[in-house]
Length: 402
Image (cartoon, rainbow, N blue to C red; front, side, top):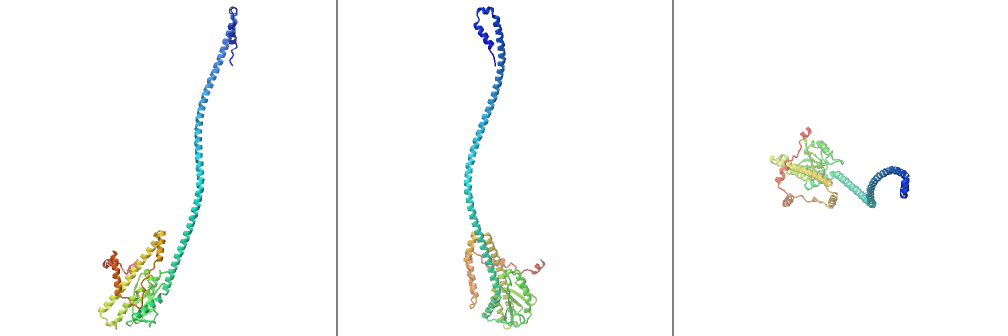
């Protein structure tokens, strides 16, 4: 701390000095002046120190001010960041509130939708199970009907042959007078004609072709008998034609022909034409050729019809499967409903009335006219151009080589 006592004393002395003191006491003043100067130097030194201290403090204050400014700036930044965080927090809180509200609603909606989907799934599974069950029942019924048809095939064929023989005045032999027990035997022109009914024994049709072939080989027991015609006929159900690969079995001494029930009456009518001659030896070569030509054309047309029916049967089956697999479910359901409501009633056969060829020709011409009026090509030459080029028989030697 600075002291100014000597300076104050000097100033007080100078103020009060008189003339006497100026003349005789100047030494005292001089000493006071020296002491005061000494005090000034001391005070100046202290002042400089204090000034340096003040400067240092001033610099420190400036640094502090700068730091304060930086802190204020950082504070402002932090406050701005805090404000942003507060706003973000408020926004997040609002979003969280909205999310909690919507999540609860969404959860309820999801639970309701899930319950609806489960109900729909259960309903679809139930409907699908019912549909599969109905299809299985229908298939089982179809197989049962086929079995029943095949079981009754022999009886039905016998009744039909008897009916045709009665209408055409042909002798039906109840018990064959030769070795063996054929299902049906007709006597035409002193020859016995064997017509055996053949049908599958079970559900599997894969072995039916082999069964027919084996039975054709065993038919030799009839052909080798006296007065038995070398042409033997096997009558099979119409629904088995599509799986048969061969319809004629030629052996050295006899031939076996495979025909359907639908071809029975045309076959018997053509065989009856032989009865117009009392003795076969009286036939002229031209008559023999005419008979052979008619029978050959009949056999060819019958087998062609079987071949074409088998082709279209496969096409319709493929189309039915494609419809079930390709159509949308709702459309397929409507199709099935319409299908169930449809009913196809083919013309019934009246045993007391023969089928007139002229009526058949008239109906065919009417169908041809109706088709032509709708733009459907019915020219015979165009239809037969490709049909006749399709082979009727397979080369068995090529198959054996393969």
